[in-house]
Image (cartoon, rainbow, N blue to C red):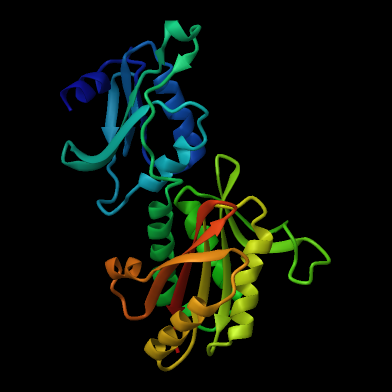
Length: 304
């Protein structure tokens, strides 16, 4: 904080950027790039302050404001990742968000190509995606506006939340083979990582355990997934009175379902970490051409 205050008072400092409030990932990405290419070893971006030469003002931001997802989205727009740390701090008694950026390091031994110390980002990990999906479905489940809507409207809500969290999301993408086999399939939600397909989400509304309808959607995933993703998701928006009995029947059925690829394992304990009565999940593991692939089953009880 001493260094930041010194830079704020220095009219010639070029390794500090102040913005009253800017939550656009594209702008944050631009500021990070500027700091990473700076002649100094590192730089700072302050959200919640303004600076004009040696005169600065601390405007402050809401104490509840979190911009983690904005920064993650910004980093995904960069071809080379600098070292970035960020946190909310108090500056002159007001909340600000400080982003610390370390300069790009040139590795002479690698033909002077810019080389960065890569951070281990959780995006792309199956566990991180599963967690973010569950948080999205929790928000959907408690939202009164989505208790009596179509499957597409619910999917749109989930897509928007995932995009806000920095995921590359496409909906209604045509790929693979349709259920009839006569045309391309239409994927509900396709999640990409750095432009490459990562996971497919297939969703459906259920007012009872319609096994034929459920089987059709499960089989759709494998017709749409032409590459063999490491994981995919089948999500059921369920409106029944006895959700516990529904889940027991659902679990029994998917154990007996004839999958396009051999069922080699079922993990029911995966849902124990998220011990909710009205959102249930488990995972089935399949052998696809000698490689394990995962299919997550998520059932969300919607409001009556």
